Image (cartoon, rainbow over all chains, first blue to last red; front, side, top):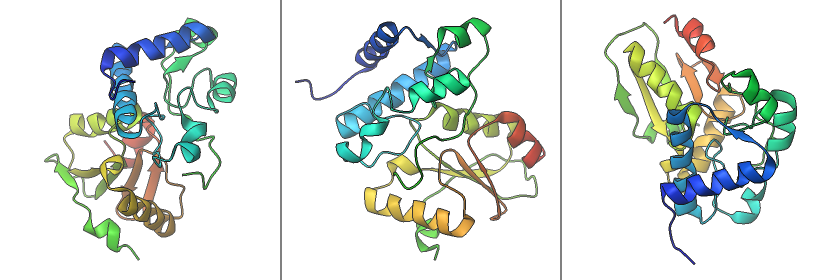
Amino acid sequence: MPTSKNIKDTEKFVSMVAEKQGWKLHPKKSFLRMLYEGLMTNWNRYGYYSCPCRDASGNRDEDKDIICPCDYCAPDQEEYGHCYCGLYLTKEFANTRKIPRYIPERRPEGKY
Amino acid sequence: MTATLESLEYIQEGKKDIGKSVTVYALSTCGFCRSALQFLRNSDCKFQYVYVDKIPYETKQKVKEELQEKYEKRVVFPYLVIDDSEILVGFVEEDWKKTLGL
Protein backbone atom coordinates (compact mmCIF):
# COMPACT_ATOMS: atom_id res chain seq x y z
CA MET A 1 0.00 0.00 0.00
CA PRO A 2 1.66 3.25 -1.11
CA THR A 3 1.95 5.90 1.58
CA SER A 4 1.60 8.87 -0.73
CA LYS A 5 0.21 9.86 -4.11
CA ASN A 6 1.81 12.04 -6.74
CA ILE A 7 0.24 14.09 -9.50
CA LYS A 8 0.43 11.22 -12.01
CA ASP A 9 -1.36 8.84 -9.62
CA THR A 10 -4.05 11.44 -9.05
CA GLU A 11 -4.46 12.22 -12.73
CA LYS A 12 -4.80 8.50 -13.41
CA PHE A 13 -7.43 8.12 -10.70
CA VAL A 14 -9.50 11.03 -12.05
CA SER A 15 -9.20 9.81 -15.65
CA MET A 16 -10.31 6.32 -14.64
CA VAL A 17 -13.35 7.66 -12.81
CA ALA A 18 -14.29 9.86 -15.75
CA GLU A 19 -13.84 7.07 -18.26
CA LYS A 20 -15.85 4.60 -16.22
CA GLN A 21 -18.70 7.03 -15.73
CA GLY A 22 -18.63 8.51 -19.21
CA TRP A 23 -17.79 12.00 -17.92
CA LYS A 24 -15.54 14.69 -19.32
CA LEU A 25 -13.04 16.81 -17.39
CA HIS A 26 -12.70 20.58 -16.92
CA PRO A 27 -11.54 21.96 -20.27
CA LYS A 28 -8.81 24.24 -18.87
CA LYS A 29 -5.54 22.47 -18.17
CA SER A 30 -4.41 25.02 -15.57
CA PHE A 31 -7.66 24.64 -13.60
CA LEU A 32 -7.51 20.87 -13.86
CA ARG A 33 -3.95 20.93 -12.57
CA MET A 34 -5.09 22.86 -9.46
CA LEU A 35 -7.72 20.19 -8.79
CA TYR A 36 -5.22 17.36 -9.25
CA GLU A 37 -2.89 19.11 -6.80
CA GLY A 38 -5.75 19.61 -4.36
CA LEU A 39 -6.85 15.99 -4.54
CA MET A 40 -3.26 14.81 -4.17
CA THR A 41 -2.76 17.06 -1.13
CA ASN A 42 -5.92 15.70 0.45
CA TRP A 43 -4.94 12.09 -0.17
CA ASN A 44 -1.56 12.72 1.38
CA ARG A 45 -3.21 14.49 4.33
CA TYR A 46 -6.11 12.15 5.01
CA GLY A 47 -5.42 8.91 3.15
CA TYR A 48 -8.32 9.35 0.75
CA TYR A 49 -9.29 11.64 -2.11
CA SER A 50 -11.44 14.07 -0.20
CA CYS A 51 -13.12 16.77 -2.32
CA PRO A 52 -10.61 19.61 -2.86
CA CYS A 53 -13.32 22.28 -2.72
CA ARG A 54 -14.70 21.31 0.68
CA ASP A 55 -13.05 21.35 4.05
CA ALA A 56 -12.64 17.79 5.28
CA SER A 57 -12.67 16.66 8.89
CA GLY A 58 -10.02 14.02 8.37
CA ASN A 59 -12.39 11.39 9.78
CA ARG A 60 -13.22 9.03 6.93
CA ASP A 61 -16.72 8.28 8.19
CA GLU A 62 -17.62 11.95 8.48
CA ASP A 63 -16.08 12.69 5.10
CA LYS A 64 -17.43 9.69 3.21
CA ASP A 65 -20.03 11.73 1.32
CA ILE A 66 -17.33 14.06 0.00
CA ILE A 67 -14.81 11.47 -1.13
CA CYS A 68 -14.23 12.03 -4.85
CA PRO A 69 -16.39 11.41 -6.80
CA CYS A 70 -18.71 12.76 -4.09
CA ASP A 71 -22.34 11.86 -3.38
CA TYR A 72 -23.43 15.24 -4.77
CA CYS A 73 -21.74 14.83 -8.15
CA ALA A 74 -24.70 13.15 -9.87
CA PRO A 75 -27.40 15.61 -8.71
CA ASP A 76 -25.10 18.56 -9.46
CA GLN A 77 -24.39 17.22 -12.91
CA GLU A 78 -28.08 16.76 -13.48
CA GLU A 79 -28.85 20.34 -12.46
CA TYR A 80 -25.74 22.22 -13.62
CA GLY A 81 -23.88 19.84 -15.93
CA HIS A 82 -20.86 19.49 -13.66
CA CYS A 83 -19.77 18.73 -10.11
CA TYR A 84 -19.18 21.28 -7.34
CA CYS A 85 -15.45 21.58 -8.15
CA GLY A 86 -15.94 21.82 -11.89
CA LEU A 87 -13.90 18.65 -12.27
CA TYR A 88 -16.38 16.19 -13.77
CA LEU A 89 -18.62 17.37 -16.61
CA THR A 90 -21.40 15.54 -18.36
CA LYS A 91 -20.75 14.94 -22.07
CA GLU A 92 -23.67 17.23 -22.87
CA PHE A 93 -22.22 20.09 -20.81
CA ALA A 94 -18.75 19.53 -22.29
CA ASN A 95 -20.22 19.75 -25.78
CA THR A 96 -21.56 23.23 -25.06
CA ARG A 97 -17.92 24.35 -24.50
CA LYS A 98 -19.02 26.39 -21.51
CA ILE A 99 -16.61 26.77 -18.62
CA PRO A 100 -17.89 25.36 -15.29
CA ARG A 101 -18.91 28.06 -12.83
CA TYR A 102 -19.19 28.07 -9.09
CA ILE A 103 -22.45 26.38 -8.06
CA PRO A 104 -24.24 26.36 -4.69
CA GLU A 105 -23.18 23.83 -2.07
CA ARG A 106 -25.55 20.87 -2.02
CA ARG A 107 -24.02 19.10 0.99
CA PRO A 108 -26.48 19.40 3.88
CA GLU A 109 -25.67 22.20 6.29
CA GLY A 110 -23.96 21.16 9.48
CA LYS A 111 -22.04 18.37 7.75
CA TYR A 112 -18.51 19.57 8.25
CA MET B 1 -16.49 35.95 20.11
CA THR B 2 -13.98 36.36 17.32
CA ALA B 3 -10.79 35.64 19.24
CA THR B 4 -9.71 32.84 16.91
CA LEU B 5 -10.37 34.88 13.76
CA GLU B 6 -8.26 37.68 15.20
CA SER B 7 -5.45 35.34 16.12
CA LEU B 8 -4.95 33.94 12.61
CA GLU B 9 -1.91 34.81 10.55
CA TYR B 10 -3.37 36.39 7.45
CA ILE B 11 -1.20 36.81 4.38
CA GLN B 12 -1.27 40.39 3.09
CA GLU B 13 -1.11 41.11 -0.62
CA GLY B 14 -1.68 43.91 -3.14
CA LYS B 15 -0.91 47.62 -3.13
CA LYS B 16 -3.99 49.44 -4.32
CA ASP B 17 -6.25 50.72 -1.55
CA ILE B 18 -9.85 50.37 -2.73
CA GLY B 19 -11.28 51.89 0.43
CA LYS B 20 -12.60 48.55 1.62
CA SER B 21 -11.08 45.86 3.75
CA VAL B 22 -10.99 42.58 1.86
CA THR B 23 -10.47 39.26 3.62
CA VAL B 24 -10.68 35.84 1.99
CA TYR B 25 -11.00 32.51 3.77
CA ALA B 26 -9.91 29.93 1.21
CA LEU B 27 -8.86 26.32 0.70
CA SER B 28 -5.42 25.81 -0.80
CA THR B 29 -6.75 22.73 -2.59
CA CYS B 30 -9.73 24.37 -4.32
CA GLY B 31 -9.70 25.59 -7.92
CA PHE B 32 -12.32 28.30 -7.37
CA CYS B 33 -10.51 29.59 -4.25
CA ARG B 34 -7.24 29.82 -6.09
CA SER B 35 -8.91 31.50 -9.06
CA ALA B 36 -10.46 34.03 -6.67
CA LEU B 37 -7.09 34.87 -5.13
CA GLN B 38 -5.55 35.18 -8.59
CA PHE B 39 -8.34 37.54 -9.59
CA LEU B 40 -7.53 39.77 -6.59
CA ARG B 41 -3.80 39.61 -7.37
CA ASN B 42 -4.44 40.66 -10.95
CA SER B 43 -6.42 43.67 -9.75
CA ASP B 44 -3.56 44.57 -7.36
CA CYS B 45 -6.04 45.61 -4.67
CA LYS B 46 -5.04 45.25 -1.03
CA PHE B 47 -6.40 42.08 0.51
CA GLN B 48 -5.58 39.48 3.08
CA TYR B 49 -6.27 35.77 3.06
CA VAL B 50 -5.80 32.61 5.01
CA TYR B 51 -5.85 29.00 3.85
CA VAL B 52 -8.31 27.42 6.26
CA ASP B 53 -7.36 23.85 5.33
CA LYS B 54 -3.82 24.48 6.58
CA ILE B 55 -5.00 25.41 10.08
CA PRO B 56 -4.83 22.67 12.75
CA TYR B 57 -8.17 20.89 13.22
CA GLU B 58 -9.29 22.33 16.59
CA THR B 59 -8.51 25.90 15.57
CA LYS B 60 -10.08 25.38 12.17
CA GLN B 61 -13.35 24.27 13.75
CA LYS B 62 -13.36 27.43 15.88
CA VAL B 63 -12.66 29.56 12.81
CA LYS B 64 -15.68 28.11 11.04
CA GLU B 65 -17.90 28.49 14.11
CA GLU B 66 -16.85 32.10 14.61
CA LEU B 67 -17.41 32.98 10.95
CA GLN B 68 -20.84 31.36 10.96
CA GLU B 69 -21.80 33.08 14.20
CA LYS B 70 -20.50 36.49 13.27
CA TYR B 71 -21.73 36.75 9.69
CA GLU B 72 -24.64 34.33 9.83
CA LYS B 73 -23.73 32.89 6.46
CA ARG B 74 -22.90 29.28 5.84
CA VAL B 75 -19.16 28.74 5.65
CA VAL B 76 -18.21 27.45 2.21
CA PHE B 77 -15.15 28.45 0.24
CA PRO B 78 -14.00 30.91 -0.91
CA TYR B 79 -15.61 33.04 1.81
CA LEU B 80 -15.11 36.74 1.11
CA VAL B 81 -15.60 39.30 3.90
CA ILE B 82 -15.79 42.94 2.85
CA ASP B 83 -15.50 45.69 5.46
CA ASP B 84 -16.19 43.18 8.17
CA SER B 85 -19.86 43.11 7.20
CA GLU B 86 -20.63 42.03 3.63
CA ILE B 87 -20.16 38.40 2.64
CA LEU B 88 -19.83 36.68 -0.71
CA VAL B 89 -19.48 32.91 -0.85
CA GLY B 90 -18.12 31.06 -3.83
CA PHE B 91 -16.26 32.72 -6.67
CA VAL B 92 -18.23 34.24 -9.50
CA GLU B 93 -15.91 36.82 -11.03
CA GLU B 94 -18.64 39.24 -12.13
CA ASP B 95 -20.07 39.32 -8.59
CA TRP B 96 -16.69 39.96 -6.99
CA LYS B 97 -15.90 42.69 -9.57
CA LYS B 98 -19.19 44.44 -8.96
CA THR B 99 -19.18 44.14 -5.17
CA LEU B 100 -15.57 45.23 -4.80
CA GLY B 101 -15.84 47.91 -7.49
CA LEU B 102 -12.89 46.50 -9.46
